[in-house]
Image 1 (cartoon, rainbow, N blue to C red):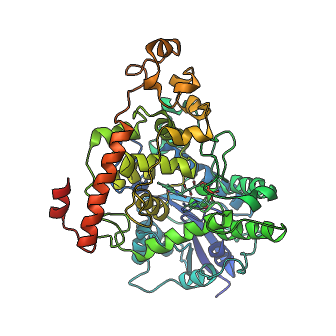
Image 2: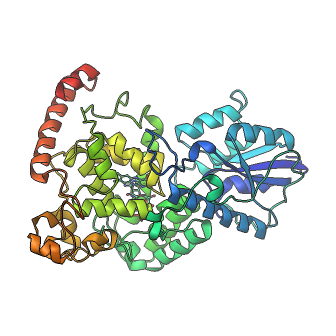
Length: 490
Ligand code: FAD
């Protein structure tokens, strides 16, 4: 490569400096490196009531996390003698314009398996000819084994961007600039702050406790632990690429090498990272992975379309405190423990409400800070017994499951303060409390907090019956169930 050449480093999800092969390659033998992030309008939906189907549009917490991550990235780039160039618009148009305007010889970016990014890559690939950095990135990042592949060199400086020509560059915008407003609901701000610096801090805190890493065993953790969550809470950082999964993987391996005994995949911490890759691999190779229809690995189930029940679930009004508290944590924090996600996903679909998993997926997609196309869809397929897992008789009780971990109901009291004075005997089933107790707890069921939207016993029984019927139909018809056949089961 001509040492006088210009590189464009297109940051999309790899919002970090450490272990970033694309950035390393961009810097190599270049006179100017233009580090670019394009604010994509497709991603923005400030209206808090909008849950458009299949939409990847992000809620407030995820946008805040993104902006914090961009600010942190800009700071790190400035420390290397460069800066982040923020542009706004349809990303492929913007990038193509910049390539011409800045006379770019080398375009570098992180390969992404999501359909949206695949389509975007095709557009900028200029009729199918991959840019030079593409192949090179695949070669570096696509190593089959993370255990031995070398991390990218950490950069001590970066060639500065050259002349910016007619491209409109801005600083990292604020939430308000993007049309988002802090709502009143946000009285408790998510404790999850964006950025590579925070990611590395959290990672070193997690791996410093060697016994904890060595004995990590999912699903044994406590889903109700919120002051000190039972898992790493690194998912948002992996989602935005503030943390390199390869670096994370090697840090865990390092701990494992130095202890006598440790847990193994699939339950170990290393095993969790492999789940991530498992879902990426299946999602990449499965057309219509994010849909029931046309998805060859998904059971065809005649889910109900019940907007009232869906809204009660989404807005934490099911009347089951364990379920509602988790949904409040989702809205406030944009993160919940894995088993908490299990409980609410099971409740919405095959456990109680029999609502389509795609509807729940949309709500998670908007509200999770770590919302990840492959992982989110994969886990909804799993939890709804549509794919991967088929034991539909095993249902999470919205009453007794949480009680096992948190008999006093501290998690519920925190996220649903309306129930904070309910005696522990009734905290998971407040509708059973005598009126005198409800009055004393200043929480009348049906007035201050809703009555349960269904009776769990009969609803879960009915769900099992309907799933048995649907499974039978799928078996008979070998997966090719028509819309007509599904209608007959509704
Ligand atoms: P840890 O237990 O500390 O695990 C470390 C990392 O391993 C995680 O950050 C994550 O990258 C990966 N990992 C852990 N569990 C899984 C899993 N089951 N599948 C794939 N990767 C995993 N995770 C997301 O990152 N994004 C999502 O959109 C998402 N949607 C989900 C939807 C449902 C219905 C369910 C049941 C789970 C979903 N998960 C999702 C998986 C899992 O709940 C989270 O990854 C995990 O709770 C994140 O917390 P952590 O970083 O503390 O996890």
